[in-house]
Each structure stands twice: as C-alpha cells, then as structure tokens.
Length: 240
Image 1 (cartoon, rainbow, N blue to C red):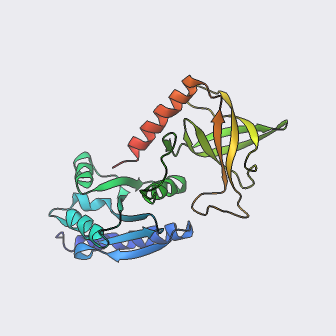
Image 2: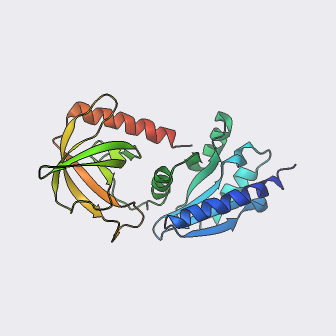
Image 3: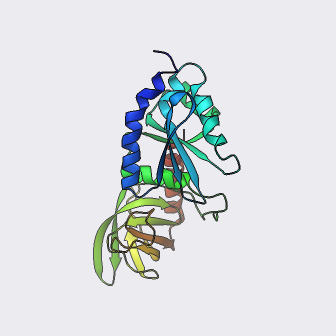
C-alpha cells in the first residue's frame, strides 16, 4: 500500500483520541493535512498545539515532513507545538520526527495524567513566566499532615520546588502542611504551603485535575537534587 493511501488508516484512532481529549475538557478541531493525513488541533487562545500520527515517520516519502509543514503553515504568525501520538517508533523514526519539528511524545500506552501534562506543556504560551524549577508528571503516593490530621493522596506532578497533589477537596491556599513523598529509597518529610487550590466541585483551573499545588519549604538539598534528577529523566522520556 503506498504512502498516499496509508495515512487514512490513522483516522479511526485519531477520532478516539479526539473524544478522549474532549472528555478532558480540551477544545478539539479535527483536520486533514497533507495527503489525507488526520491531525488534531488544540487551541487555547494563547497556546496552540497539533497532534499528528507518530507512524508517519515510518512511511516512505515525505508525508511526515509535508504534514508538519502544512500544519505550521495554517497560521504561520502563531507558535505551534507539534506532538506525535501512537505506538513508540524506533530510534531512526524518532530522529525523523525531531527533524520535522515534532517536540513532544504522546506514545502509547499513555495514561490520562501524562496525556494532560503533555498537552498542557504544548499549550504553554511563549509569554508564560518561567518556572522556578522543571516539573514532570511523577506518580507517587504522598502523606499529608496538617492540624494533627493525616491524609493519603497521590502526586500528579512534581519539581524540586513543589508538587501538584490530586485531591477532590484540597486545602485552601495559604494553608501550611507537612508532607512525605517517597522518592526512590528516600522518604523525607518537608514543610509546604498550598499556593493553589482547585476543588472538584468548583474547578477554577479546568485544564488541571482536582487538587492543589504546594510549594516546598525547608526542603533538604539532597532530596531536592534527587527530585531534580528524576524530573530530568522523566522529561527526557516524554520528548520525541
């Protein structure tokens, strides 16, 4: 089967991906790029992203390159971040994706937390303030302690300076707490402060799951260094 026809095989899978993203609250537009290749646009005003099939990099000819160029050319004055979705291709195909301008990977199997994190990264506007530290989706249990109470939760993302913790009923912004997040063999405790609350009943930030962002205080330098290394390794794995 030649390269002109084969991109149509990705269409059904992309419809399912589009439905999945829409159920997560993202505005999705289906597009048909060069030679009938399906693509998904996610446009959040200040940020814009396009998702294309990772399998294009394994087709002969210039379907991948033509598709990437066509997507970028739809609004050349606006920044566009390209993501590749599907089964992870081999090293040479990944190199080809990078050369075509694809930055982020959505390689299957991908859970909802990582899918959300990657799409949010792609939609970050160029004018966004730079974060204090790199963050990555690192799924881990966490134990919260506040006012002599203890609660177990899960981490959505983490950096050396803070974390986003999944909670339907988060503590209010400004609340102080102590938390313990296992990282490797370390189980240190650190003080933290809630800087953002996003309750399930009234989500002020629909692009994020229900939860709360906390900033670490008095964190041990060795612990911070371990987190930084884990974050860098995770982000490298999520790049094309």
